[in-house]
Image (cartoon, rainbow, N blue to C red; front, side):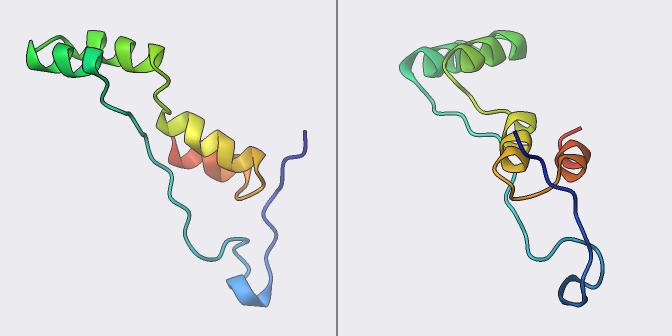
Length: 81
């Protein structure tokens, strides 16, 4: 596994970062999840169902981006706290 550390240059004003990267939670609304929402299930129950069905959390998305070499581990942890 290779993780990258940011390094500065003239192109990025010595920050090590240039441009933007979307880090977001994604959750597909399945029939099971829709039914839980419609019956006003608790936040915990909805979260549990979503996790069981493969929801990608903010932290998981950020860490995946670091593992793919799109950003550093430090930046991933900073934006997903």
